[in-house]
Amino acid sequence: MPWRAILGVTVGALLLTALTFGFRAHYLGWFGESVTDVAAWGGDWQAWLDEQPLEHPALVHLMPEGCLCRFFTGQHAADLSNRAGALGYHRYQAGEAFLRPDLAAPLEPAYFPDSPGPMLALTDADGQIRYLGPYSDGLRCTAANSLVDDWLPLSRAGRVLQVDANSCRCASFVAGR
Image (tube, rainbow, N blue to C red):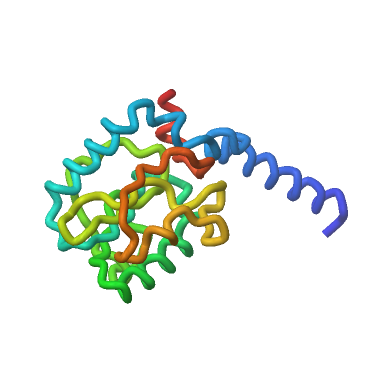
């Protein structure tokens, strides 16, 4: 293949990627930009979790429909599900299924509260939120900068609603701004 064809294909691929990801601006931003009232947001999620047929403690993966961030989140989510299962969590996924059913049972709710991007909820044995927020800080949602790992052990006391994170956000949610 002549060098001009290779260059054309490369430039075309880069342009398509830039257009698809909206020059990345629509996929990376502060989680808290979309959560204006953290207490109300946490309350909405707690009410939603209370309505679900969950066994507790639970790890619930939350993936908005059509969210391209699932490609960045998948490996970290699978790793967390494996570790959570070993720690005694019941594992679920809501929204777009992106994990194998053996890693997280699907939930099919008619509705769940708005989410700026992929996130998860950890509950205690009584069903109360222990952690709610994105998987990690940064676009790739990797374990290298995980926000969840410290909260995974059930012996950890406390509660955190994590919105102070620069994380992958879903274009469908951001486009509505």
